[in-house]
Structure formats: structure tokens, C-alpha cells
Image (cartoon, rainbow, N blue to C red; front, side, top):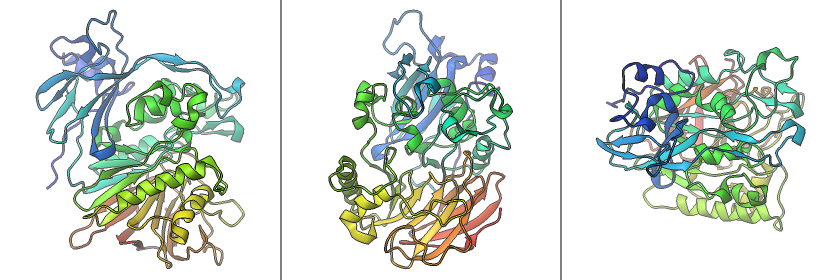
Length: 487
């Protein structure tokens, strides 16, 4: 039996949480102003390398005078022992830098909040901030939510203006609540949290009043507020997407979500440092005794094949060699690779045959592992980026692939059904089975009973309707439905 903690979300604009705590006089801890719940705008737990759990808080508290170290940060109680959280980064406005948009459609990124953090020991049984418990990792997680591409698209270059204030048109809050209802032990977000890049035009009704740009107000609207229930339900493993590269929402990525220590050189504030900040080494998170997930940063990957002389080619080859080392560890029956861009999956193209997987990553991988692409021991790959669901298994032995990019952004068109004869996501990869759909939703990943060493993956709609179940066995996936799945 899996024991659950009752967690109340502390989110700005959410009636439950800060307001309730204030009414009951629980805002401060022993009168500590920084620990007053009315200042806490977001609180969650992220899991990084070597399974290090990190409690994070976004706070609007601004002490009149810094009388103690980390004065802006609240107290945190770990197994009854109280300490002040460390300041990750304080308030500030980053000067306008080159972005993916024209300067006239960009603005400086304002962060009028502090981000505080605290490493949580693996032995911790309870953690709380401002009187509210935070979810802790399970040693042997059984149920994991997988989702991605969750933000609301406001993009002038594509003339794409999602109705961000319409909970039916932009369904991330609905997806988040449905996923939280499964009481997961862990959440894996496969990237692209932030999409509100440009100001909503005056003649577009559905997005009037939405924040835009790369500052705190947009991050709050695109992630922290709609994901409130899911952030409260379980710790998260956070994968970086292309919308979190430095010319987009990289500043917020490093302030809020990245698991490495914050530094100016890796903040995306100065474009001169993008060559460093746009790449992070892969790391592994153990999922119990026999499985690990390897997190890979592909935020800056391009769409065309790389040449061996390209700087990215060397970077990605080195990182895939690191993945190989992680996958070769003894005692691990299952290594699951996760990054944002699908490698052995399709990109739908309206009115045409689907495009293959990411050519840049394929070129670096095939230079090391030929048409296996992944190093030995990588049994399964999880991605987003493409805004549909795909489950693909191969006759030719390549790593099985799942795509779950349907949490909120505009959906892609459905893949052709059936696929054109000979369609393949990569040279040498012959499809054995594919299941796919194009509707908002998420995946539920569950540990299968012994003696199986695999996992099951259930695809759900935003309303919680089960669409398909896929069982992992080694490098293969067997789904109970094939081809297009109607929601």
C-alpha cells in the first residue's frame, strides 16, 4: 500500500493555500516574516542528479533590511528540524537580450521575486514550508505521470494566439488536475513549459490581458498556476525543451527549474554565454532498484543533420557517451532515456508524409552507434516537442519510443493512418507497431509486477479517458491498439 501525504498548494491567485493559512494564523513560523504563507507564490520539489531532491520556493517577500543571511527566504522544516532556505537568486530585471523575436516584440525579463531552495536528505520523512507539507520522492516509485508541451502559445511569427483564458481551449490546468487525480509518485515533464512569447494583438479576444515575455508573470501564468495541483501531488523531474533555450525562456529555466547551482554564466542573461548555457550534461535519476531515467538537454538542437566539424556534433557525441556510461551500470535492467526532441518518432506534416525524427541528434548518435542510434542498455525513450501521442516499436531492434507532447499547446495534425508504405523515423528503423492520437492528455507510467522488468504506459485524455495501454518488454512496446486512436 502506498502512503500519500495531504498537500495543499500555495499558489498566487489560488484561494486555497496562502489565504487559508493567513486566516488561521499559520503564515509565519515563530513570527518569522519570511515564512508568512501570503508571500509564497509557488512551492515544489524537483529531483536532480543522483536523486537529489531539492525543495524550491518562489517568494515575494522583500525584507526591509537583510539582518540575517538569506533573509528573503522562508524557514523549512525537515523531520521537525527547522532551518532557513538558501537564496538561489534574488529579484532582478534582466536587460533586453537577443531573443527568438524581433526587438520590437521583446522586452526585458522582470523577476520581482526571490527563488529559495534547500537540498532534502534522502532519509527525510517530512518536509514543510509555511506550515504545508511538500511531496517527497519514493524509493520505489510505482506511478509516474509523463507529459510535455504544456504552455499557451502566443507567437507573432506563427500568427498563433491560443485563447489562454479559456480552460477548454487551453487545457493544461485540466490536464494537470486529471493527472494529479492519479496520485502519482513522480511527475516527468518532457519540456516546453513556456510559450507566451509575444503580446496578444488587440483584435484577438481569447488572449487579452495575458502576460507575455520571459519574466515571472508569464512563468506563473504558463506553469505555476495551472500546474498547482500536480506540483503539489509529487516531486518533478524536469526536462529542458527548446522553448527554454537562452533566446527564449532560458532565464526563467535557470532561475526556477534547473537543478544545478545558479550562476550568472549559466543564467541566459548575457547572450555572450549562450554557448555554455544552452547545454547541460545528462544525469540519471533512479526509479527504484532496477530502472533509471537519463535526462538529456536537447534545448538547442537544430533540425538538420550535423557535420563532424560542427561544434554541436562534438558536444552531443560526448554527451551520448556519458549516456552510454550510465546505461552500462551493473544491476540495472532498464535505462529510460528522456529528452525533448523525438529521435525515433515522426513529426506530422499537414497534407504530406510525416517528417522523420530529429536529424541533428540522429547524425551524432549514428556516428557512435550506427543504426542502433542509442547506446546498449537504453531500452526506451520518452519525448515531447511533437504535439501528439506516439508509441512506436521496431522490428529492427531499435529503442522503443513514446511521445507525450499534448499537455496544453496547440495540437499537431494527426499522423496519416495508415502510414505511407516504408515510412520510417530514421534510416534502418523498420516499424513493427505504432499507436498514435492527437488530443490533449498525458501518460501514466506504472511499474509492472514481477517478474517483468518493464513498465506499462497508459495514454489518457485531458478528461481522464483511457485511450491505449502499452506494455514495455525490453526494447519493445506492445500496445492494445494500433494506428490512429480516436479520443
